[in-house]
Length: 312
Image (tube, rainbow, N blue to C red):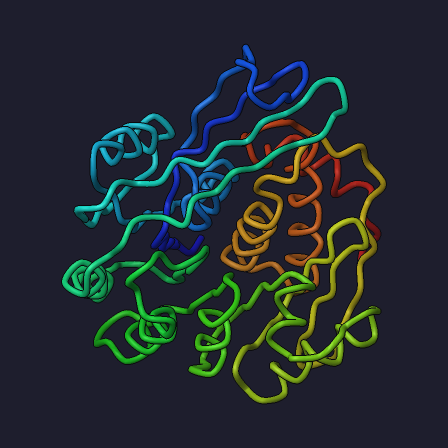
C-alpha cells in the first residue's frame, strides 16, 4: 500500500451548529456543536486514514487559533508537519437550519502568508517521504498563484524517491498547476473546469471533451470532474466515462469533493484500476453528504454506496 502526503495551504477549524431558524439581529441558540480540522488536504487525509491508509499532513498554522487546529489534528490521530505562520488560522462555520433543512456555510479568505513562510513549506516538502502528494484547497493571500505548479515541479525534480502528484483546486491555482503538468490526477468540479476551459460546459459530452483536452495534452493522466447531483466524468487515455449520481437525501455538501479524492487516491494507491478507483470516489462523495456537518465519508457508508454503483 502506497503512502501519501497532503498539502493544505489554507486550513480551517471547521465548526458546525444546528439552529431552529436563522433570523437576523436576534441571538440564535444553537445545539449539536462540533469542531473538526478542515481544509482540502486535511480532509483528504482524514478519509484516507479511515480507509486504512497512511497519510502525513503538511499545513500552515498560526496565530491564537493555530494551536487549536494542531490539537484537532492530533485528536484525529493524523501524522502532521506544521509550518508555523504569524497570521491566525481561519475558522469556517457550517449552520444547519432545522425549519427549512437549508445549510449555511461561512468561509473566510484566510491569513496573509509571507514569502518566508510559504518558502519554508517548499523546503519541508522537499524532504517529504511519500509515494503521492495530494495538493488540495485554496491558496491564502500572499501565496503566489503558481504555488501548486512550483510544488509539482519540486516533487518531480527532487532527488530520491519518486512522488506522483494530485491536484484539487480552482481558479488561477488550478490553471497554473495544470500548465505545469506531470500530474497523476486533477479533480475539478464542473464549474471549476468551465472556468479553466473558458467556455460553457452544459452537458456530459462537453465536460468529457474539455477534460480529455487536459489528458491529451499530457498534463494529467486522469481528470475526474464532479458534477454534484448529476454525477461525475472521468477522462483517461482510453476516453471519457460517465457515472450518474446516486439518488440520496443529502444532509450536507461539506467534504464531498475531498472524500471523493481520498477514496479514489486510496484505491489507486492499493493498485485498483482507474475505473474501480473512480467508482470508489463516487461512492465516497455520496457517503459524505449523508450526514450533516463536517464528518466526511465513513467506510461503512462508502461500501453501502458502492453496492449501488454499477461496475464499469
